Structures are given as structure tokens and as C-alpha cells.
Image (cartoon, rainbow over all chains, first blue to last red; front, side, top):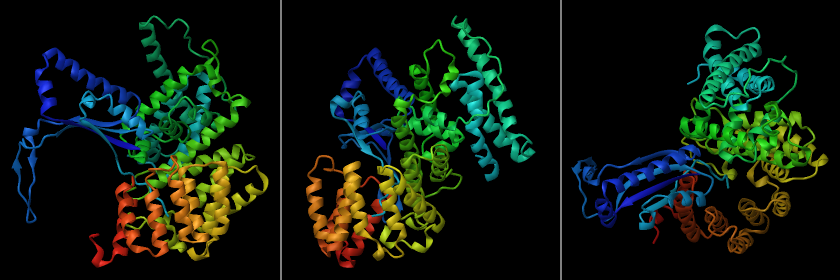
Length: 123
Length: 425
């Protein structure tokens, strides 16, 4: 099964990050790199990306069938998507175990969602 | 992308495990030999279509793979020298290629219990199936580096669990030893499981764009045939092959051109593969009469009963129910329970099915299973309780983990709700 691990940021997590020293930030990046390497080595990683700051977001608003673009930021959003892992692993339990290793997990900012596959019952 | 013709591809896949077996026998070293064979196959797939198939294709592959193995081996030795550990490595003396068939031994090796199922699948497809990494990646719908990583990890694990193949002091050619008799049944069960996984990967991903994709169902059937040729007396191997044939026979009718799922009852049975059904039915009938019964045989028998019915309403559901009851005692599991519930409903009426489903869904084994809602919706639909069925179909559509299933469940809900009921009140 494929799962996506979504990592969010919120004002509190951003504040924690901003308060980090350069060394602490380097250590933080190292945790991510190590997790990525571990998942690549186990053959479970499909892709992972960190997203640019939400101030760089471009939103496409709905307007009578015409797409007009506006720029961010969307400060009113409390939680913003910050990055993701797409993995393939044996079970939902394993996906959860991996997600718990993301540094934001203790802050409640990480979620795991199954990806739809192409299987199907014939009924 | 492969430029090779189907004939060349078929020949390469047939020869791959033979060439690998010979290399391992000559030189030991599963890891390097397997990489070398992979590169020889790649070279052949590029050269043969342009330059013609050599007179002795097997000899060609052995020569190219041996040369490549030597190169890989030299760079490995150089690396180990740098690590001051090359003392024990001496160039192995070539031996004449023995006329033995290593396919079975290689299957056991690739389905080694120390490996994860995903690694077993990837390694089996490459080392025994003769597929190239890029083809495996396309077939499994994952990126190539992910597959490459699974294979290299699998090889490391096999090396690390060397105890099963003789300790470090023994020559590595003991890799090609069959598992000891006491372990054989368990190891064979793992091989069957891996082949079934490969089949299912192909079967479930059969909708959508499959251009340039290796048909994993066909590959699984081919490998299972090879296994059966070598173990003709094993009832479960025969059962597995019959199950694959009888399931794959319905494939032309199970999806619409747009990829939407067609339920069994609505499939155009004229599009089923009559030859595969005949072969599978004969095989399972013969096996049930001669071998000790097992779960694959029972599943094949159920598939045979479905496939034998000229129309959905001709299906012998009583026989299916009996088979499911046996299967429940032999190999219980959520999917078996759900199949049994449907069979109960078809024999004793939808309300009987709904009662069994309510009882079964309370069991932790089934509670929260994403297909419970779909079966409940189907049974309510059969019972004529359309209002409740619509709600359950929508709930099931939200909870399913399959895209085609979600489309099917939503469309069934829309059909039942009618134009007035598109938005539930």
C-alpha cells in the first residue's frame, strides 16, 4: 500500500523553528535527511519533498470558469502544508511508525493517509 | 524502454534463471552474478533485435554475463584491497556448465523468509523472471530507484542470513542448495505467496494505461507453470495455477474501456477467455481428486464455479457456500468472511446475509475493514432497501482504498438514488 505522510506547520511550530540556533537547525535538517535515507535504503520511499514558504503560494480562485491567480500569503490559515513523504510499505501500522519519526509528530502536525490504488472487488 | 520483440523478450526471460544458475555454480556470489546477468540481458535486449539473435543465445548470455561478472568482481576486489580484506579472495576456476535446472532453487532463494514481501517480489521478477529493473518499476507503478533499492537490500539480507546457505567458510556455491527437507513446506508456502502477490499486483493494476507495461499476471502465470512443472505433485501449486488461470480469464470483461469496474454479475461472459477457463477447470478438478485440499485449491474451485455459469443467474451458489465454509475453517480471514457472507445472501436471501455481516463485523478481525460497507450496500441493494443502500454505497465510496471501486460505488449510489436523489437528504 502507498501512503502519504503530510507534515504541517503552524504558528507555534514556526516559532519553535525560528528560536532554534544555527546548530539546532542543522541538526533538524539532519533528522529529515536521515529519515529519507532510511526509507530509501529500505525500499519504502517513493518521493519526499519540502515545500517552499507559504508566502510563495499562488492560489487559483474559482471565478465563473475562468482561472485567475492571486498571490499568497494566507496568513489566516493556521496550519500550512510544509512537506510530504510518499511511501510504499506493508501496513498502515508501519506507515504510522514511520510518521512518528517526523520531528513535527509530537506537535500533532503530522498525518498519514492511504493513497487509492487500482485494486477492486468484482462483487 | 525496450526495443526487443516479444520473441526476444520471451527467450531472454526463459534463459535468465538458467544463465544465473550457471554463473552462481561457477563462481559463487549471488549478488555479483545476478547483477552481471541483468546487464547481459540488457545488452541482449538492445543488440539482438538489431543484429539478430545469436546462434547460441544461451552461450552468448553466459559469455557476456561472465565477462561482466569478472569486471564487477575485479572492482569489488580492488575495493576490498583498499579495505585490506582481499586476502581470501582468489579468482575462481571456471567449471563446465552442469546440465541442471536451478529455477526452483532460485525461486526458494528469492522468496527467502528474511526478505520483505516487496523485496521478494522485485528479486523474483528480476532473478527468476528475467525482467529488467525499469520494467519491474513500471509494472509495480513505483520509481526505478525504489525497485533497485529493494533488490540490493534483498541481496544484502540474503548474504547476511548466510547461515542458511552454509557458513562463511564454505564455498558460496552452496547458495544453490535446496532448503533442508524440514523447512521445505514453509519455504514453498512463501514461494506460492510471492507468486500470488505478483499476480495480484498485475490483476489490480490492469486498468488504465498499460502500454509498455509488462503484464504481471502473465508473468505470474508463467512462473507458476514453471514451478508446477518442477513440483507436479504439489496440490497447492496446482491450485494456485488454476486460481490464476480462472481469475485472469475474466479480465477482458472486468473493466470498461474507461477503466470502470464491472461487477461479476454484469460482466459480458462472452468476453471471458474460454481456453483459460477450460484449462483451469480441468486442472482444479484433477487436483481436488488427487491431492490433500488447501486454500488455493478452494479459491480456485470457487472461481471455477463462477466461470462455469453461462449466465450470472445460473451460478451454483450452494456449491460456492459450501466451499467458503471449508475455506473459513482452513484459512480464515476478512476477505474470506466477506465472500462467505455474500454466498449466504445468495443462497438464503439478503437478510440472512445482512445478519451474518452484522455478527461478523463485530469481530475485531473484520471491524473497520474498508470493504464491510461495500458488502452491506450490495446486500441492502439486493434486499430492495434502496434508500439504505444509497447511504451505504456512499459511505463505502468514501472508505474504499481503491479508485475503480470508488467510481463503481458512487455510480451505483447515483443509479439507485435516481435523478431526484442525487443529493441525499
